Image 1: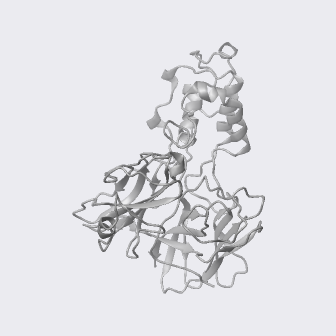
Image 2 (image 1 turned 30 degrees about the vertical axis):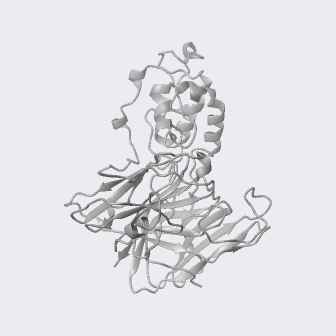
Image 3 (image 1 turned 135 degrees about the vertical axis):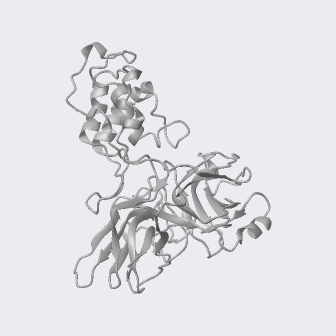
Length: 433
């Protein structure tokens, strides 16, 4: 039974580290240089070295989360990486790092962030050699690397009007009105969020304020912005962007773009976790990558597949929620991918499609081992057209048993707080045919 299918609404998702790209000099057959063994300052370059080999791999796959000011420890310094070498090799060889939660057997995705065997060998060979730094002049030209993902441009930067200090230690959802002062309609083909205080910024969402309702809400409440659990506080809105820790930004796939009408204000919703920096303030900013006037891009929108009627009992280790619905809108919808979202009781989440007459569902998106710390927007290599008569299934599995450290002895329902739960995928879609 369809519990909730909306064609406009919120967008809840998080990204992570930079996307996969091929690293230069990835041959695993290099000869070890015994003269460089243990010499982290040496300039010998006839084997694997930091500048020539290791840093390019880390820069493309790891520095989105592991750099100064990001969400985890810094891996941009060769001495630090050498000290953590064995742990890094173990995590990469096992596939634990870099994190890429989607099931690779489900459907090919753009920018799959997995290390090749050659890249894994570079890291292990470097540690075996004693972590030589090598000659900086041998570092590959960043522009010459075969980057699979290029972060979005920052054509328009919008900063929160003034610093805000969340109160207490619980989740604080705050909305701030920002006006891009667009004199003409704009097409957004990518976006980034730049947290000012990453210790307290949990995630960020950007909405349009089509009917100019947010300013009155802001004026009616003391302090910068206004409280806004769930969404911006009104229904006439569309989602323009989102951020979660580690995200390098989002570039919309397959020559698509989101639209903003001229004169439309934007609302930036920030989910703060004050416990990360008690008393700390934040004044984050959002940047938009705008299309040129003569660019021909397909208009898209975010549509949430939502099961908002969750009842997760205490003690349940494999509790399923979700719904199925049959396409019956008189139009076809192109599914480009999207952002799955659950909280800390989440175990797995998937979206599947079954054609009329078929006995089995085919996988569109599957996160078999949900991790609240690694969320992202995933785009298909080839979009899937959902036609009238197709059956779509959203399934979420939850673990509220003692095997989950975040379990509770109470029934858990849908809610915005981290201790509540969600079951949704915000799909990037377009009308098709």
